[in-house]
Amino acid sequence: MQPFPVRAWAALYVAALLLPWTLAQNVSVISLENAPNNTLEATAWALVYALPLIQLVNQTSAVYRIVGGANRINFQDQLASLSSAAVVKPNVDTLYGRVIVDLSQTDLELTVPNITDRFWIYPFYDAFGNNYANISPVNGSRSGVYLVRRSDDAAVAPGLQTTVPANYSKYQGIVNAPTTYGTILIRLLLKYNTTENINSVRRIQNATRLVPVPRTIQQPETLKVSEFNGALINNSLTGTPPEQLLQLLSRIASSNQPEVASERFRTANILGQAGLVGGTYQRPSGVNTTLAYAIANATINKYINDTRLIQQLGNGWRLSPPAYNGDFGANYAHRAYIARTGYQQLVPYIVQYPGYESASFTNFVLPANRSFLWTFSRKPPVRTALGGFWSLTFYGANEYLIPNSLDRFSVGDRSNITYLNGQVIYPVGSTNSADEPFKILIQQADIRPPANWTSNWLPSPAGGGSGSFILRWYVPSNDFTNGTYVFPKVEQIAAIR
Picture 1 (tube, rainbow, N blue to C red):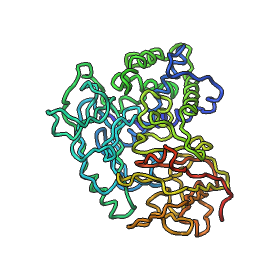
Picture 2: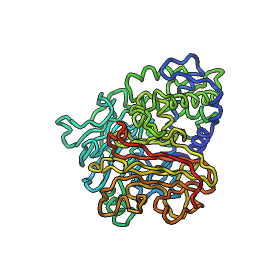
Picture 3: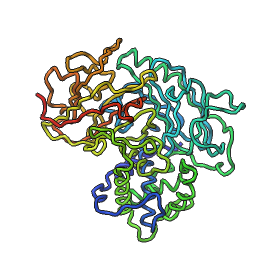
């Protein structure tokens, strides 16, 4: 198998992400629902559509360097740390298992072991980051063997098929993938960062199996598909970063169709107008691809800030509707935005990621000697019977964890946080029936607060600066979205010394 060349993918990833967002303030935007008016607009549309491939390539290169190829599980045996760079904005709640899925030659069989003592999920993503299927007790899935195949081979809709035909009775279910290439990002909750808990998760990891098997069914038109390897992204990708991205899209588009079947004809027409025909890309005459990329970014900004697509939750908090989270369908702008800011997002019934209005959803700027004080009205109402949990993680400007003397990167329901009276909210080995307000202090890593704040201190970048956060409600109750739960009040205050 030809490996992914590090230099080539890194150049594409970094250069594409660093193309000027500021240009997005001074260019026109396009409608993603309507047909483009010209080849420049078609190119911008194609770039919005293709942007998640940057993250796919980034993750593929990282996984291949460790396990040597597709359809092999790269299990994490320790929580994310300061040196972790394989997953953008990693959580420090779960141990990951990463897989690059390549169904070009075979189907796959996934064995999920019996897991009864913690939250777990085996989520599947298509080539563009859609979370199209999940194996988890949250949706009633059980341990056993699952078949993974292309939905087009079986002429069925993408997703998890739990009612299987008699000749597939060995399987608990069938995962029907909308694209030939994709990913899996297994998440296994680490309740506490102890040797005993880590060993428990490792036993689950060791009992998980993923093996190629001969195709069970195949359509004639899908017989010849390239493996997902370094031949797809190498020195033959030329031109500007947007042109390289479009060349990559042209090479895989025919075997990685839109998840929504009704979008396929329209998408093929627009990509053809943008110069993607027959597996190759030819830049249309007169098209400036850097300008097209700026238009694509401006368009993404327009869609994600459209107030009609935002649910207000109170106290400045907001959430995109379910169709714009995790499994995006034809909502390509949100898909591109999440690929850039939180790749491999889960669907909302598994986890919700609320954003904060004055922080552009999840970004922040905290001046030197200033802090955030978050006041929670009560314990976040996650569904603990299904393994629900919650956490708040802050990240630096590089989208990774923030160095600090406590090695604390997150707080949540497995942290030693306390109520205002000093009572531990979530005592280890027991429960606390109290459900009262509590505060979290987000303060610079180089300004240690007084001892009475230490348990509830989450360090932010030393010296102040920018970054981002993710508030994760895993297995959320309806209280979060029906107005019952009062979301945290966020204040910026002088640093507490």
